Image 1 (cartoon, one colour):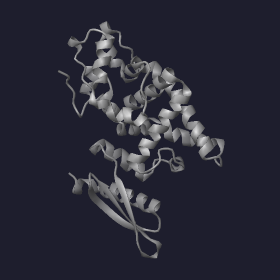
Image 2 (cartoon, one colour):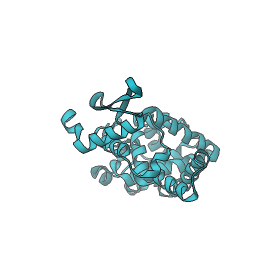
Image 3 (cartoon, one colour):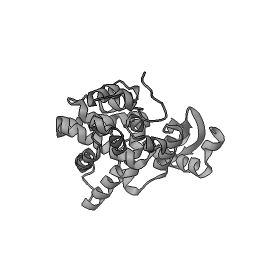
Image 4 (cartoon, one colour):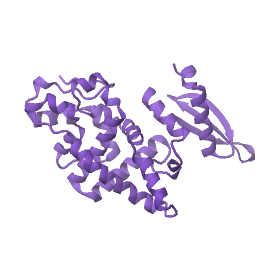
Length: 265
């Protein structure tokens, strides 16, 4: 019987698997992959590349007889491909930015924290193949492991189908992100640092595996009433001249007052 956990990565029972094809079949049957597959809307021509992208080096040492390969080389490739993908988007989207600002924006989008946060939305940590030591130390929650796995996945798609298909899969991911969070992953706001909304998103994803939801309604005198929800519970509300300004102020209030502790804990 397959053993999985909703809070940890896919558990691969070493003694019952004797070949790379056994591991691959086992992984592809896991329900943990559903969000990841939906987000990228991509089907691998060579599923072994998919398996390779999900395999952390700690698992390779434990499955020496099965010839699993770690995702380290795919991460190296995916890092370069992801830089190109993001660069091409921000070049077209923000033609007014200088070379220096384009570089800063790209760095803000593809840094370890940003990619780890994106990976959590995809449940990528629950899809990884880790050794027992990393499972015990909760490696599936570590920013570095998540970011590296995300880059490896981009590299695997690139090797599997080329740059054009990788662009399509990445755009599908961006659309998925916007649908889930109500905002764009690639946005000029991230040029100005790790703002309060981003901080709150990372915090709530780590604590509750969910992003906060902002709801706005029009008031008199061209004002907006904006309310922030987490796990369908209202944390705070504010009246503001603009939705964007109100959302940032709400995020600051929740962070400063730690409102999740009184409302949810």
